[in-house]
Image (cartoon, rainbow, N blue to C red; front, side, top):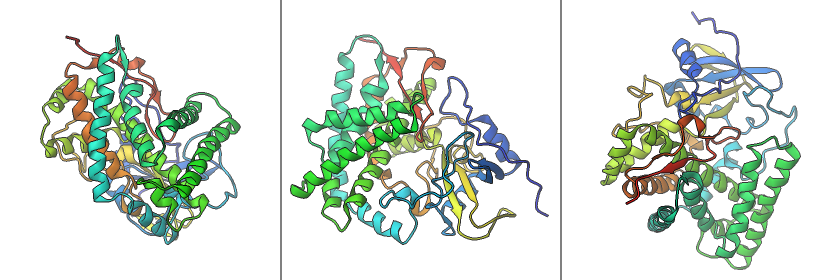
Length: 407
């Protein structure tokens, strides 16, 4: 007999003060009662919430659930929505379904060759060393977000897109302005204007690459079969996947490590590739910077004894799935020696993050380099005073003041 589900609620979002890497406690309470529950969406409709690891992987791998219809409603009280949304712009992979998604993804993943990834590792090591050298020269508390967490992926994505050194400051200013608007009470018009400015930069870059392609990912896309709009949107997809995910994980991961000094000390001693890889996968699991994913049922589907009707929305809480004791022992403990493989921070199935290997290269270089260079690193403010970046799609920190023992 199918259990009676509790009434629908809005997606819980309140996190513990001082521990922003921990998901809302209400999510674990919901999972203990039922891994599939009812949830509200903007526009006065109800759908489904997934909080268990097993169901998250099951639904993300099920071709009967799509992504293309999930962009016009959100499980957040007061979120805007469109009754009749326009078609998904071509090139935004996370909102596309096969067969178009297959064609686009094949082209973009083809740009991340083994040769390019090897070259990238060497370059990330150079960039990380430069960032740490600059940090070491600063007096007083240092903001780890500006000096490290956003700087490293910012330089990497700029180089992957082939942005010239002279244009990088303009690019950085445009992206930072767009993100800063998410922190305040900016209007939709202001946010749209900022996004269009970044898009305009990408359009100018595309034109330059058509005239003079270089050995970078964006040039590879520009010289492929894609239209102008498709190339620009793919560039914006790479920007979001390659910048915000890494920056959020570096900032939240560093915060979590400093709140767990025994784990930070372990990281200072992690020298072999396996140990570093385990540490990074655990930090990805523990922080889950993309708090939820959304899918829409193409047809009536029975899941866990309940009928999800065609057209209904499903929200997968990556944060809850990554803290499921059914998959990970003592899931609320940070343990960088455990095997955290199988987490859903990058999603699962055909929509797994297209830049996940890029992210792993950066994280596997940056985290241990930080720990080895600054073994006495610690917070320079109370944990509760660290400003959390939770107003936009990717979770993270606005700043992270730190200090260390200077010789």
